Figure 1 (cartoon, rainbow, N blue to C red):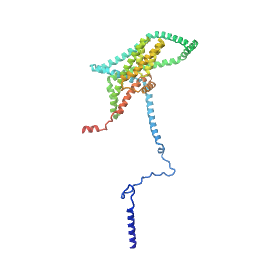
Figure 2: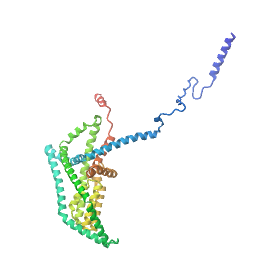
Figure 3: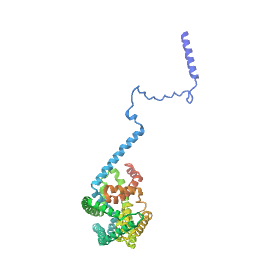
Figure 4: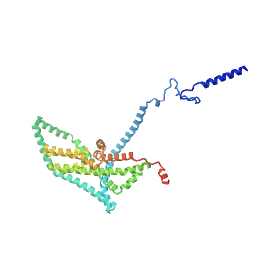
Length: 410
């Protein structure tokens, strides 16, 4: 009995002291105590972590980016090697695209006036290639006609340069000039074998040029006649998910290419007329062939203009002397400034403008891969790629599948 009373008293005291104990700050008296956070298991002494966990995070990111960049570089290298192996085919096709962009408006105009598509295509292509052939024949005829006069002027120019060196303050003696002339003659004589190899290589280049021209001719005919259907067939080769984006980028790329070709043609004509008229007024021989060279060089931005201008300056120096060469140089520089600051921004516009650094690298890369032809087609391809990339990056996202159907049914 006493034992039971003692146990009841002890239980009563325990409950009383438990209810009087103050609750922890921020926690009500009846709230359960928060569970303590789980602790990471402590590895046993001497255990090593996994290799992936031991690599720092920055090194992991660099490795992930590195192998992807290596894959991209390998892909680009294989692509460049493939293009170099079949560069005649690639250049012929790209040249046919450029010619088609230049002539397709004429075909469309003839077709609107009632001429069937086939005859309009043949008439336009034959007229274009005939005009190109006449220009080439005219240049060769002018060079052959004026070759004797240019040779005589070259000899007179060499004699004038020799007399100028003898009377100059550089104290050049006639013996030194004769020694330099003998070294040049011996150099040309010792390199006869290299000149023969260069001649054989030139024959190969001529054969490739003829083959490329024929391929470009036939490709241009088919592109002018059946270009839209060829484009629709090409879209079928792409994955189905990418077809809407490519279908939207294609017309914009074609508009950019057409604007580039037309604008460059106008700029080249203005350059050729201005420089050709200037050197003709100054009495420089081969003025018309030099104007044609300036016109062709304008299709290679920056580099072509510099080379064609320097050629005109050299011819003026040999034929007419230092003063005329300086005047020709001033004319070339003035026309180039007019082209760079007024003609190209006004005629080409912002749609096909490419940064000068991108132009330099694209011309250099195209020249390394495919020579002069690669330098010609590099800039328009970069302009088209810029337009396509801008469209794909800024186009709205495609709606998820079934959204259009549900909206139509609703």
